[in-house]
Image (cartoon, rainbow, N blue to C red; front, side, top):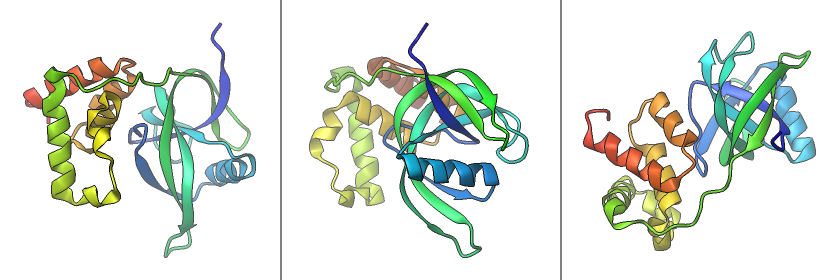
Length: 196
């Protein structure tokens, strides 16, 4: 039996990648409770792509793989709703779920292994160059990205998975891949096809 952890889940119509940020607007009581608990305990929560159902209303059925989200900032929107900026951290696999009385979905999850630190391989150098050009053209290079990041296979793969015009199902497949080199191969395949 794998070592499992209990994690509140937030099913969404999007895939959060490790290292990526995401803005959320919180209005349902179950998610207000989740934010309060995270603030009190210093915990994160899980974001999973919706498999069946909707983001609001009855608890949706999530896919079995997701990313832990950590709250980095919060505020209030013009219409009075709580806003969050979260960052993806660890990946997890959901083994089973249950629904609390307040409608919050909670999963028993196992954490996926952290990516190995591997230099970008020659066959993937095109991907690192593509990412660097996108960052330079969009002006996000001002964020102080260290040049060494472009030689980190996992970092390059996650950033491309985040910014390329992929479908949620393509992003989900990349999220579920444990091997950073295989993730890069998938990205090469997507770029070389008509998929994006």
